[in-house]
Length: 172
Image (cartoon, rainbow, N blue to C red; front, top):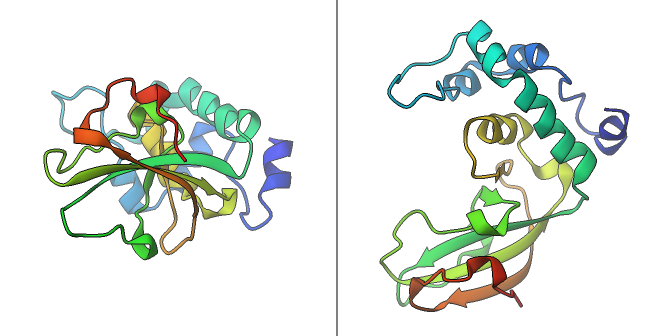
């Protein structure tokens, strides 16, 4: 965690254990924590959350603060309706660090699909939400803080919204 503390000068800390992490969450962030079993549509209590996610939490911290290099390359796909342009001033806060998860999940059958590549600085990531989402889903989501600017370094139109060989797409 020492490397993490050096990287984050503007953040006080991200807890290095699941108990402190849970205690640091806002009421709204705690409401995002759902049981990993879809047929139980209920929030997890503190003890259950810790029992289920303790080891996974440590793995996520290692991934984000020991393995990744910053600024981090992130991906997002967008569906843009015909005759509309990409709004670069409001490019969105839902990104992923893994190209294979950068698919359009909404409005896939309408308009044109574009794959974006950007870089983000470590201090522009909403760490509580990013960690929660990585605990709960396999999407490898990076959630950006509101109004943070990222640098778009590549864009590619995905023809006919086909994602064949998606992992091999070269973005220029």
